Image (cartoon, rainbow, N blue to C red; front, side):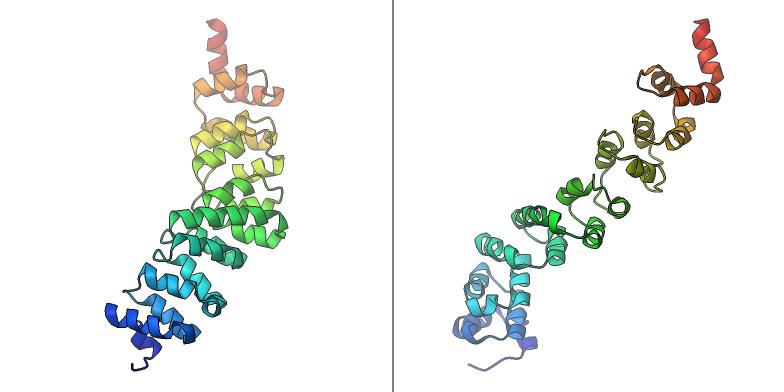
Length: 247
């Protein structure tokens, strides 16, 4: 059988590829192995042959490629997850081309390692992590982690509302959220910030003018609302409370 260059291997026809891998899997180089895996005719059977070769799977780039491929049998892809670097796991966890079962397993692996991360790693991860890790980072006490999380495209309004309304949120987190250009302009977030007693009063007061009169009435009547915010509401809409007194 002729020997092929890596470029040739990427374009072999189905039968030629199968024959080549069957005869040469034990001697493939890293470059050749990656070329075989990049071939459009790669099958689960061929991926399994490569995945079962300890010499090839000892090569980091081969393991990484096998995990990312839908053709790799799930059991073998799952096995290699434990041998990847953190930021490769983060990248794969948000890659929709990776099978959902593999992404869930990656999330579990990542969640186990969060406590070992330094601040810089947490900040970098929060910027582009999956929804599972967003939940883990949401109440991180380091402000820079929240700053990164707020620009993550996978962050949902329900996540932000959970933070904005939580008694576990810190004043620093709520202040950051109140100044965020992406989220602070959403009505539900404004209202949640005002209602949270832990929101710094200047930040809470700055949201009042954007709320409806009905919500202002309800907030004013809420026993948990501070005297400061009540006075701010009264100054902002005196006609609301004068008409209320008349009623």
